Image (spheres, rainbow, N blue to C red):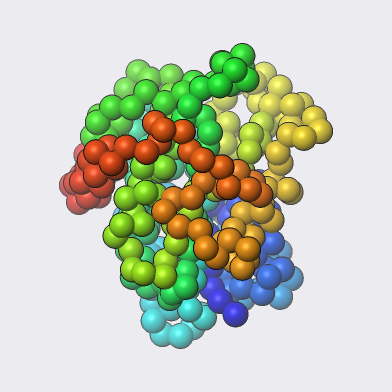
Length: 292
């Protein structure tokens, strides 16, 4: 079969995706914190699991996890790596908070950690292979997000986005998700033939750990909304993400194709900007090489 690396597998979307991957017979490389419970569940389903403990707000941890994964692959301890799922994410309630490396926390975990991981591992993937990044439609405004006061992205130079700021938390989150779209488009231009880059939007999932820094009342409202019919939840979106990473149905996707749960949609024009994509690539190389 194959091996799949996934970040943030411990709960919610990541856990549901991990268990769906286990059901498909994949070897699993789990990167994140508090891995023992989900690793045990995956093993109970017959998967071979390797736990690579890492705090994704620390680039040193990310590099160490990538090195450990590469060693497992190079030594034949696990089967060839054919999918990397950049699932982990958060929305910091205070955009003045920084990662261990001095970067704004939401940008650091959602974007920079995964850029580091991909930089370290993309040459270890065995084609045909897939890199699946987690996106969100919050990067642009529509009537429903406006009614719910969901902030859209306010793009500026990536070096500025990486600095602590007074941005509202939702703006920082949407900026990170727009960065992922730009990065996906540019990444496809740099990886080897046979590696497809895709962005997966799981749908709006209120009440998950993504909003862990929100006030208790807001978290309670989110949990209540999450029970409404038609609202996305990890139990439905997790298997969909596993499918995008492994199933033949999606094998043709590349160039940052944007998948909303179970169908491809066209990203808005703001998400296609070659100058911004190139600038993000350059700035990312600087941010990963130089401490903040």
